[in-house]
Length: 213
Image (cartoon, one colour):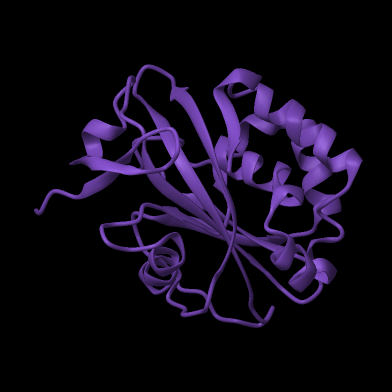
């Protein structure tokens, strides 16, 4: 089996080399590029996916739609567009919102130490997804109001990078906030942001994540 190599970066997201994926996710893993892609329908419902139980990190937890890693020389957008058919069996064009850095351990197994680009697209609610074995165990649509209720009850079952991406939606590029304002309006509100911040703190402290300009 071929080893997968990830793009190592500095704190400003400048590429500085590459490293094996497994080594990047050790407890003191090296800072590397990743992305989280969020698919919404026209009514603002978000597609969540449950990570396969075979995953090394956060197995069985709920994630954004797709999370993975760019390869050289991909951009955040092109890497997300590549992974959509590989993980969900669909193709769609993505837009870039923003990026953030975070470092969070997972038990004594490993960690995520990433600069994570956040992407967005709109798909029809009737679209047919295909779950790829070993990647995703379950798919569901969720509204902002439903997620608010769920993270109040059990924030630990949601992946930290997904929570951070949603909390930072209001920091997206202005042109994207305008383009997707009808979709994101229910997700960008103070009540949800407060609860997302609380949920993030169940995974990692405030000084372990930040917006990257």
